[in-house]
Length: 348
Ligand code: NAP
Ligand code: 12T
Image 1: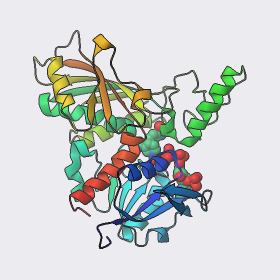
Image 2: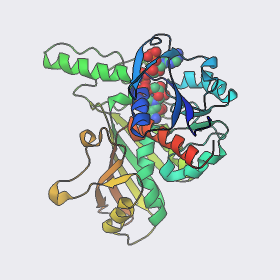
Image 3: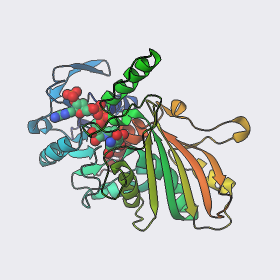
C-alpha cells in the first residue's frame, strides 16, 4: 500500500465482458487507486483503454505483471487463474477471483458481502467471487433465512448470454439479424464453447449452461447448489437448480421456491424482511404491474425481488422472482465490493 491509502490495482481479463464492467465499477465507486494495470492475453496487448480521462495500454498478463500490485481482480477464465493467481499472491497481492477455479477450495473464502463479509478476514491471499446466478439468489435468501429459517430451495434460472462472454453476445446479435433477414442461423459458441453440439440461442431457450456432470446436472446447476451451501454456511440445506439460457443480453432472472421454518409467516412479513435487507430492492406491486425485469435491472448494482407469493398447498412455501445484472452484482460489482470491504476492515 502506498502512503496515501491508495492501492496498486491490476485487472486480469480487462478486455472481457466482466473486465470492462470492473473498470467501469472502479471508476463509478471512485476506488482508491494509486496505479492501475490492465492485463489481457497477447491478443489485446497494446490496445488502449481510458480510465478517469487517462489512457492505459493493455499488457500481456505474466507472473512479473504482479510486482508491486496490492489487489488483483481476475476474470480471464479458470485456467488463467490457476496459473497466475498463485504468482500474484507470491508477490504480495490479494487476489479476488471471478472464476470457478478456487470457489470450493476450503482455504478460500467464497464471499457475497451482504451474506458473509466476515469470511473475508480469513483469506490466504485468494478470495473467490461466486457464480453470478448464485450471488443474486443468496442475497435474497439470506434475509429470509435470518428472519424465518430456511428448509429448502428450488430454483429455475432465466440467464443472459453475457455470462458466457463477449463472443456469446456477438453470437446472439448475429443470429437475431440472420433470423430477421430470413437467413440460416450459425451456432458455434452456445450452449458451451468447445462442447460437441451447438444450438441457436436467438428466439430459443437452452436448458444447458456450462458442461454436463455425471449426475445429469450441468456444472452451472452444481455451482448454484454447492456454492449456496458454502456461502450460507448451510451444508445440509437442500438446494435444487435448473439453469436455462435465454436470448437476453444482460441480467439473470430466477424463479425461486423457498420453504421456510417459521409457521404462520405472511407475505407481508417476507416483503418487510427483504425490503430492509442490504443490496435488495423490493419491486412488488401486482396492482400496478410492478415487478423486476432484466432490462430494468441492467446497469444497476442492486438485486431486485418481486412476485412474492405464498404457495397454495404448502403453508411454509413461498415463490419469488429475483433479477440482477449478471455482470455487476453477479461479477464486477461483487468483486469490487469485496475489495472495498477488505480495505474498510483493514484486512489487507
Ligand atoms: P470474455 O468476454 O471472453 O473475456 C475473456 C478475458 O480473458 C479477455 O480479457 C481476454 O483477453 C482474457 N484472456 C483470455 N485468455 C487469456 C490469457 N491467456 N491470459 C490473459 N488473459 C486472457 O469472458 P468474460 O465473460 O469476461 O469472463 C471471463 C471469466 O470470468 C470467465 O471465464 C469466467 O470464469 C468468469 N466469469 C464469472 C462470472 C461470475 O459468475 N462471477 C460471470 C462471467 C464470467 P483478450 O482480449 O486478450 O482475449
Ligand atoms: N459458464 O463464473 O456461461 O463459473 O454464463 C459464469 C457464467 C461460468 C462461472 C455462463 C459460466 C460462470 C457462465
